[in-house]
Image 1 (cartoon, rainbow, N blue to C red):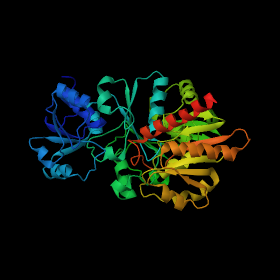
Image 2 (image 1 turned 90 degrees about the vertical axis):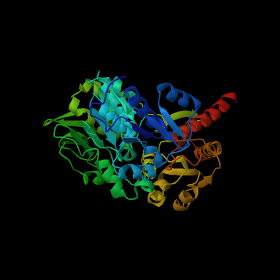
Image 3 (image 1 turned 60 degrees about the vertical axis):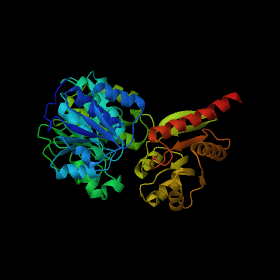
Image 4 (image 1 turned 180 degrees about the vertical axis):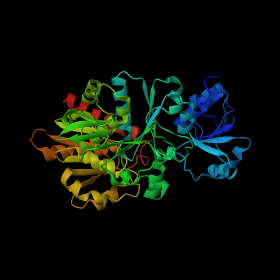
Length: 464
């Protein structure tokens, strides 16, 4: 048995629903603490997962996820990938059983303060950069949550003197109860996941839950450039803001092309904005958000500058892959919605050959028509959303491809034809603007396969 939750849980017999990353992490942590854990999933996980669960003494119910499993259970741990209107949730709430996210479980065990980052876009980069800023200044910091490792897998290893930097999704916020971050950061608000949340108002209300229980000794960071975020201001936490467009009273902003910090009534210029290593105006906003998030820790300014100049970003987010015959290939597979695709296109001075498409979320691609006409030299479209994008982007040259391999080949050909003898030759950008599930396991799988196809082209070039 290891540590016990700092904030008690409602019983000792949880039902963990879902055997993916977050469910497994919660089940492991609760079992280590002596809880009588039962885990269910309508699918059966791989043999190594089954063996691990058996070795830990976790009772499993695979091939079913029905409400009868609630018998004898005290509360439910809900995996964010499963819709919240599931019969188990309905039955649990009718029986007055708490339904808690893995994030909530991790918070109740945490000794370290939580810095939680949410928003429609930019969460992963901002979360990872926030962790990098803290570590660059010598602080103990673990990056977790909706990015990489689940909080329940790392929480016991972070001391009271450390920091848990947590990426938080709207799905996780559906089932929090006592969550109280030391710093809560809201990056932006645009329509996303409306197939699950139904309305933008419901989606925004879930984001607002991150701030609901904060006290005056906590901090709430918001994007002063986003009217939707600013309209949701609520709670009693100390306000911090970030902005590329105007000066903020407290937080981080850009003035005369310089990054400026405003803290405890004083203002100081940190560095030229052009020295931030990440590409694109949206990433400058992410950098400002990360700076505002760590302001309460009063980190050495030299360490902040060094990290911002050296930070290279995350895989699958405007990630340079290779240059083949003068054509640069960039992997932005994490762009799973139209807003992410838009900011990716805005990050390039010259028009690109774009690979886009996938499982559409009911988005209006027509709103990006003028940007596409300026920034897309040629679009190679894949997946279920190809026809909708093509119909919305009248006047943009379009080719369809049945597979990602075919799309890479066609995009490479289009980029070479457009460049002719010019230098630099051009860019092929994978920025799908759609979910990946029609053709791939997830956006990581899509990005990895894109990089493998680019490597195929690179090796072919090397042999000729």
